[in-house]
View 1 (cartoon, protein in one colour):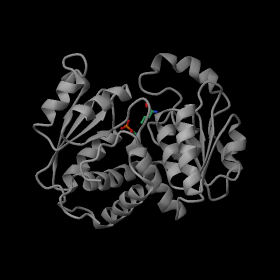
View 2 (cartoon, helix red, strand yellow):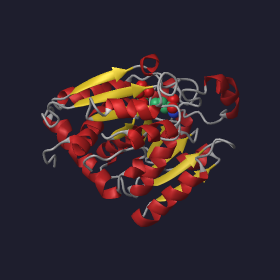
View 3 (cartoon, helix red, strand yellow):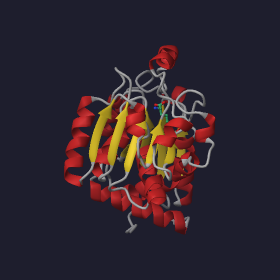
Length: 308
Ligand code: CP
Ligand code: NVA
């Protein structure tokens, strides 16, 4: 995995995903190891962030390295300077770039023109680092990934895309329930279904949230309007009526089911407060796992030592 760009979660094979998760669990126990001593990560962000920024910064510090955060106005990606030039210049200073961009094309351009690895820290089509933390959380809470049934309720967005691909790669049964016009893109469904055929998992796009949640091990949701879609928030609130994860939907799932959310959450929209703040919620363990999963990913991509 050394030197690898991670734009999509599917840039890792099923066995590479397993190795990253094993390292994440080991690092979670072992704490800090100077695997990236002297190395620097640049964070280039076009959108706001709490979890992704802080977990990458802390991850680099725990691994003995350093991190530089560049905020949207500082970089002016595609405005002050082209993504290609930003990548060419940053590659002369740092060992890795993690970029949060509006379009996936921008992060792809960075990767194309960078001589150091580029990690997608969320784009419009994927959120691979979130998916790694999600898999780690499910592995911890359910003891396995293969055979676990996850119901994703809501928008077929970046988080849903990466989760669907990751579930397909790891033998999970992924059911997605979305209103008309908000389904996971057919190309993602097709690719994830091909992975599932290899792994023994399955991918199903449904309309009905109750059907998706019935007997699920995990119920997952995300915001109805993602960053950059704020102007559509009102329309989306109407379109997503009936897709709130509430106590009655959770009762359809298995009694030991967990609730997951990548955060930030809008209580009263995609999830009710009693669910996200209740005993079945894994949302804050999931947020913590961003740190452990990214430490493992960075170690596999950047470390000159054997991390396993
Ligand atoms: N889940 C997540 O990526 O959160 P941030 O947008 O705060 O980084
Ligand atoms: N789908 C959300 C995820 C935030 C972490 C967004 O893109 O805003």
